[in-house]
Amino acid sequence: MTVEPLSRRQLFERAQRRKSTLIAAASTSLIVLLVVVLIPKMPRWDRVRQSFFNAERFKDSFPRLLHAFVLDIKIFAWSVPFIVVLALLVAITRNSRSPALFPLRALAIAYTDIMRGVPVLLWIYLIGFGVPGLGMDRPWNSPLLWGSVALVLTYAAYVAEVFRAGIDGVHESQRAAARSLGLSNMQSLRFVVLPQAIRKVIPPLMNDLVSLQKDVALVSLIGPVEILRQAGIDKSKFANFTPYLAAAAIFLLLTIPLTRTTDWLIERERRRTSGTRVR
Amino acid sequence: MTTPKISLRNISKRFGAVTVLDGVSLDISSGSVVSIVGPSGSGKSTLLRCINLLEHIDDGELLLDGNDVSIPGFDPNIVRRRIGMVFQSYNLFPHMSVLDNITLALRRVLGLSRVAAQDRARELLARFSLSDKELSFPDQMSGGQQQRAAIARAVAMEPEVLLLDEITSALDPELVGEVLDVVRELRTVGMTIVLATHEMAFARDSSDLVCVLDQGRIIESGTPAQIFGAPQQERTQQFLQRVINSGRL
Image 1 (cartoon, rainbow over the protein chains, first blue to last red):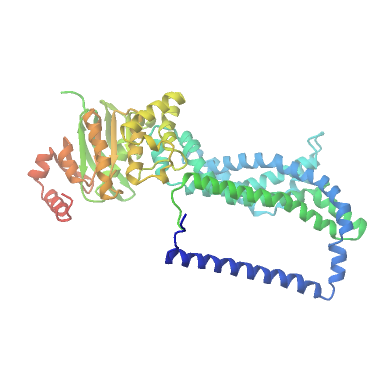
Image 2 (tube, rainbow over the protein chains, first blue to last red):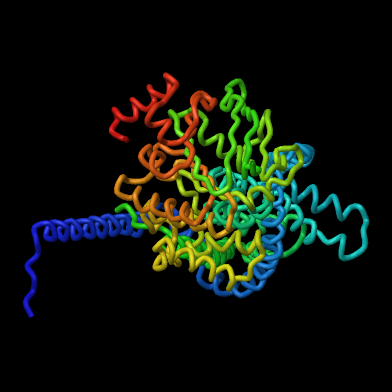
């Protein structure tokens, strides 16, 4: 078997590739070296290491925190479907064209403006303390329930704007094509506009969901012991900040795989449906 | 005399202060091919969109088989089910395969089963030489293939009338032929076709009636021989002269 000699172009491209790899490797090692060498040279590094990077405290708190994290996941899991449905309804209402729906459109605009204009934490306080204060019977007086409701209401407003941008981003000609085939307004929305709109907004949608995953911890401020609250308890008990670091690590264990998986799914979908890509 | 398939009676359309269609009247008999020609901005696309009720008509009447379908409150979906449309920029649904593009309305509007819809779609794809493309997505095909798929999507609904809105304008010159061949084939099977076009040779050779639209009015209409052989209006002559000068006839 004879080996084809490389053309000038192939030789050039190979040299380019090698050069890029080399530069990337060199710059990465330099940064790592700086961090590893310089930070321990700081005057109070020993103290910080003791109170933030204590291996014993980490090992001790980790299982407890992981256990408390289950509540975060629960709040997240039951909030997301409500957020997505409510946000879609608000976005569709805002994009509706019928004059009869004007009051609903105005309501949807007021809703997004008001919910987004006030900090999430304030809504959690207002709804989470306020509604149980009405004196309803269990389970309707649970701060956990109303804290989740506060999250759903605020996040639905943000996500609604994401969906609305996606719907606006689908070209009018797509709607024209759908309507010309005799599909009704709702059918055009469901089969033609929304599938394209949602594909377009998956990255910003994930952005909001990652943000929600962290804001779930705010519910602890009205009572429920979830991971952040548990980390605070452990911190006070042992006068050591390491539990916070452990909590951060647990958050990352969930969010990073989540975002990587989404990116992978988006890329796979893009490859499936698109033509050739520009280099 | 038989009732025309479609009758436009004094149709006007305004966008704000701009009058795009200014009292257009036109009878389209069943099985005929009508070409709407005229300079850019003369209202050709708007006219077709009005026929399909994609635009509201400000004045006038639109009759389908003698029935006024332009009266307020008339369900436009009934009209669109009977009148298909193909667009300049194809407007295929990019998130669906060619097969799904064609079967969507067959299933959701006509209520065909998945299998029946796919059978009908495959039959059309074969007829338009697209059999190997049924699982392709629009972005993976050439413009000519996309436009043929879009025509297949419209024809699959078995419309009584097909509106073609400058369907070759976005295509490379060597791809125009394959799309026009499809239209010629549809003509031979008796489909009523209304097309807005810049393809003057096609309008001359393949239509029964040619209408010259200028500033929202039909300034002249007649057989291809009349319009291209002996245009009466000065503006028609000027328009044709420009077309000839640009090498398109």
